Image (cartoon, rainbow, N blue to C red):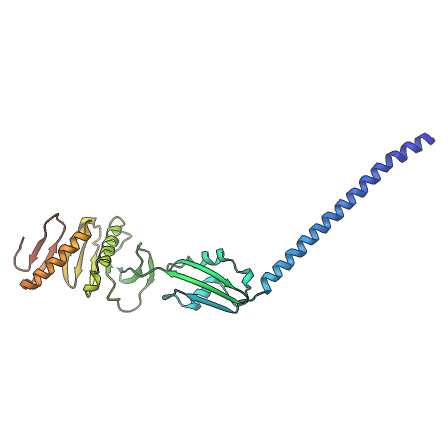
Length: 259
């Protein structure tokens, strides 16, 4: 009997020690968990309440107002500088076609600075009786309400039905801007007929029809400028000018053809 009691006591001791170790481990886990959630609560509270945003400064925005930008960002005036996520705000702002790039700066304790790089109106697109600003990639920025902007060339047609032609039209507009051609004219309208091919591209330049065709726009516009001077000097009433042929320009006066 004594031997059995001694064996039972020897077997119970390791079990009691193991039980105490488990209790200590459990208590340590509870302590760490409680500390984690306590710290998280303190950090979350600080992110919501410390350094409240009292001033938002926008720069670079010309076509979108400060109030519109605040609405897009979803800022209502109760935010903390610590809680503002630049990544989320950037994603929201870049959904606007007017915004090309954006950057932020947090000036503690209460100022938030937003720098906007806007897409620039590149041309006007007249389509189905409506007029839109478009950027250099042909993205529609905003519908124009009112009169056209005289210094912007007008693209007339439906680019969605003439997708193969639209890149050439944008390239023509880019060349005209680079050469300063648009600044010399009152109105330039690039015409995309339904079902047109790149070789069918033409434009009205201050009321004069110019058949431009595909490619080599820099050389073609240079020839056009030189030819306009000659036409004005000679006082020729012109029906149209055809620039589509290499090393040759066709001028069709109202009554006859001159080559």
